[in-house]
Amino acid sequence: MQAYRIDGVVRQGKTNQDFCIDLVAENEDQVREKVYSNFGSRHGAKRRYITINSITSIDPSESSAPVVVSHFRDK
Image (cartoon, rainbow, N blue to C red; front, side, top):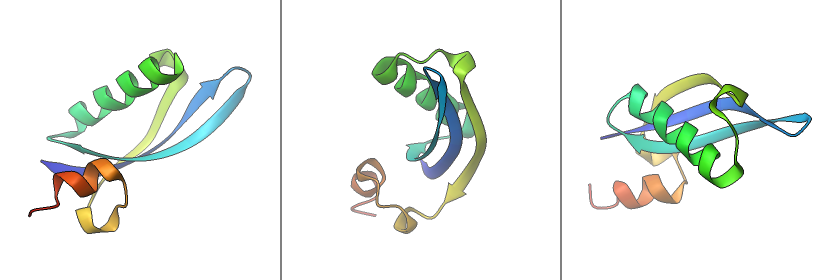
């Protein structure tokens, strides 16, 4: 498992909202699915309204996201 930083834009109503999320996944395809499912379930955004600009592999110590910190806590 590896930590990734995802930058992109999601359309909410008539405006576009930038986002930057840190996630833990095995590969970039899994990261994309997590982003799409997260915005779809929490915000009701369709996949066509979510634009992922970049997916970057990061060192887990750079992130303060709870999901990344808890996954790499004992390592």
